[in-house]
Image (cartoon, rainbow, N blue to C red; front, side):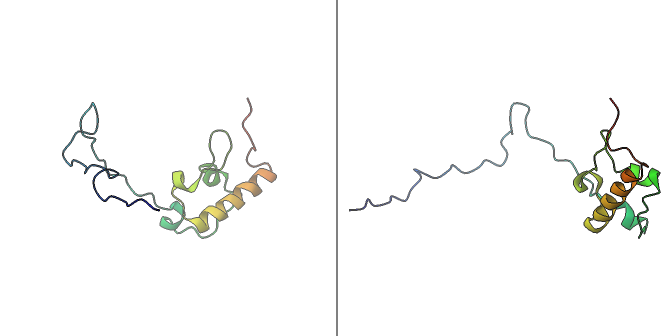
Length: 101
């Protein structure tokens, strides 16, 4: 024998209050986040050259890692080309694999 399910406010959440403060400091201010755009698309750079250390070096972190797309704003086709150029530059010793400690 099954138990009948009671429909009511027992298992439901209370409705949200729209004007209520978000915490001890009051309501949070919403800020406008500027959309990141691909540097290679805006400057119309089709080929990412591994020999251009100044350009490729902008997309490497302080520790020598390739910066992710969400931080740099590059589009996925250019991110793939950029990663390939960074790896080529590392193999030919234009760029270091890691930083010296």
